[in-house]
Image 1 (spheres, one colour):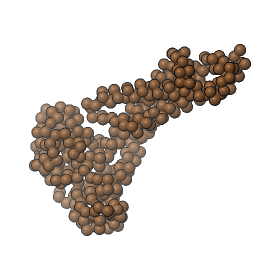
Image 2 (tube, rainbow, N blue to C red):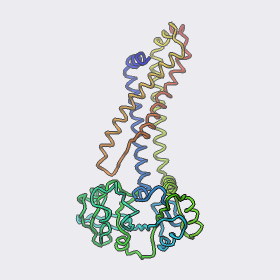
Image 3 (cartoon, rainbow, N blue to C red):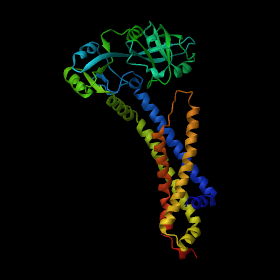
Image 4 (cartoon, one colour):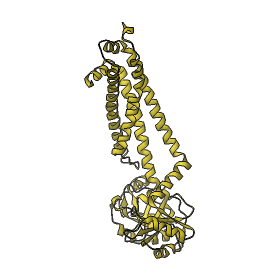
Length: 377
């Protein structure tokens, strides 16, 4: 069956190439958009993703905000008072502030300072994203982290020991991170004291408190107790806060509509390009299909033959498109755009390919199944 299907594919090479080109272009565009969207959604929750908090840790923020990127300030006393809640093991404050950066080469820009206390530095950066220096170095006076990709954009060496000004005060990079970017701003991590120093913030305000629960304690019970006890703040599970952030940004920015519409139209166009090309190819070979049916081939056999061709087109087209996606990933690896094509995304792309190829072949299947062998003689 496979050999016969392959011979049919090779019989009309121009149409076969057209089908493969349609698959490759559609899957490449869909894969590129899905990987980019996933990268951006990761940046949306960078404050959570880059932190050293665990999946069972609780995030406490003001009771109005539902987007982790626009946190309002809350009373710093909450961090101490929260320890009185049953089930709380420890609590840690996070302070976020905007700052202007002035580089030795004269460039200026805006950064986000993210501070937490050592030695845990619960706000981050996560140790897996530290490529030079150590978290303990952030406790030094005027010490901050420097993102590898941001350093390239700033035009300074991507290394520790770089000096620059933050809000006209000297700062030194003591930690170098990679892939610890923020959404809509460049994140620099440091201690809370350094954030207050650079931003002249009062000591009675923080932006969030991370609560670690005692082993064996249900975090949801602790969340309920916190929300019933404290006014003006709200406790979240980290996963729920991420989902809320996704919804807020995707809806308010129309980003979801933009990416979604391109993926939908790429799928629809690929479906009809492949389907109509297969249909046209089937019309050109009516005699061959009619002869098969005349010598005893059933509609089921002919249907399997066409679907096998569609499956082969899908496998070959997907392989070429996926190879091009890996080339594209390597091409942008030195920029701040970090794309990943793991097995769930790869499987999803293959499902898209099967849908377009096998689904589009149904046009030809319907035509050939209605063919009467006598009509071709």
